[in-house]
Length: 86
Image (cartoon, rainbow, N blue to C red):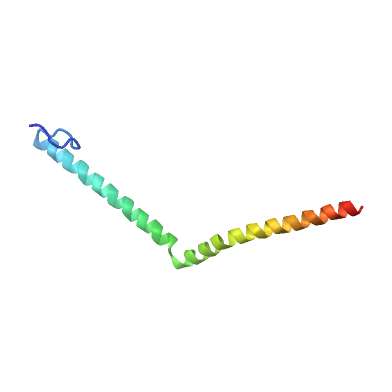
């Protein structure tokens, strides 16, 4: 008996069929568990207690970086101008 679908192993007996069935069942369960885990991670990330602080921190990071750059530029300009005056 030649298998027409090359994605399956050669099934020549009922034992082979049972093994293939078991293998496919475990693959399906593994995929389901990965999906469940992804859903849990997504739910954890989107929980309101975590979502709002995460969004705020993501929005304020660029603002804080810009503020740091401006302060550094301001401080270095003052130091340079003081050195020139001396």
